Amino acid sequence: MVGPILFCDVHSLVHRAHHALPSMCTTRGEPTGGLYGMSSLLCKLLRERRPSGLGLAFDEGARRRRAVDPGYKASRKPLPDELAAQLVRARSLCQAIGAPALRVAGEEADDVLATAAREAAAAERDVLLVTGDRDLLQTVGPRVRVVFVGRRGGPHVDYDEDAVTAQYGVPPARLPTLRAFLGDPADDLPGVPGVGPRIAARWVSAYGDIAGLLAATDRLAPAHLRAVVAAHAEQLVRVEALGRLVTDLPLGPGPHFATWDETAAAGLRSWFEELEFRSLVGRVTPA
Image 1 (cartoon, rainbow, N blue to C red):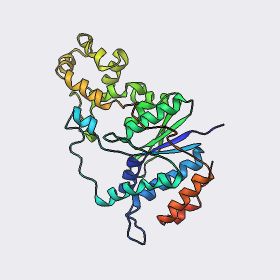
Image 2 (cartoon, rainbow, N blue to C red):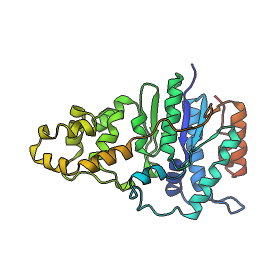
Image 3 (cartoon, rainbow, N blue to C red):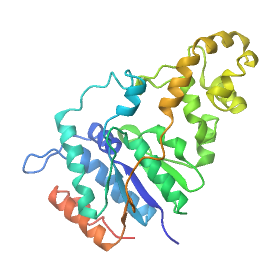
Image 4 (cartoon, rainbow, N blue to C red):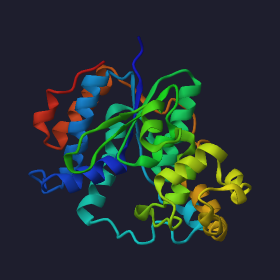
């Protein structure tokens, strides 16, 4: 049986590990705490999930979304120098294992991963997306699952279609519509006041997307929220659009991952040696 392709959201994983672990650096003074946390997780996933391929995706800004809404992620502070340096360094992992660096100018890693996952699933390959960003849950489908990495050492959660629906009350593809009602403070996206997750999930289940729901405003229950929804119509359309991932970015010719074999494993060991992650070298085994 061919194992899944493991696609990693590098920005998310390094960022979370950087804030979860004590500061680390090499004998040369290079910061490595976030890279070590990501690497430790990667070793665990390679051992337990036995993937057939490994792909790495990177953020390249959010120009397209900010053209729609200049306030998108506007409150986020610049990355600390120590973290920014590790994200740059993480790109050398691609060369080490023989994988392309998956990135598109002006686009976020979520959209890059959504595109890579769609293409792999269309080729009848199973996919595991590894991320700390819930936006990728909308990509879950028959061949695509998400391993969600918890904050500060919290448990990792595997999501298939049933798990997403059980937690949010709507199927994966409807999550951008649900988010339009609930908002997302992390991305500076407003919600609709008075509309909680249960009511929003019920409406989304009944009417589908925001266009269908706005067409049925006069039938929404409870009735006192009809005027609120109507007053926030433009916002709902905009936030739904901002939350929906793009799946047709120009990633270039494939494959968009490295075959996970002894050659790639040797490259990963060498990368660990270079970063002085000696405790991880022995944990690397090919599929």
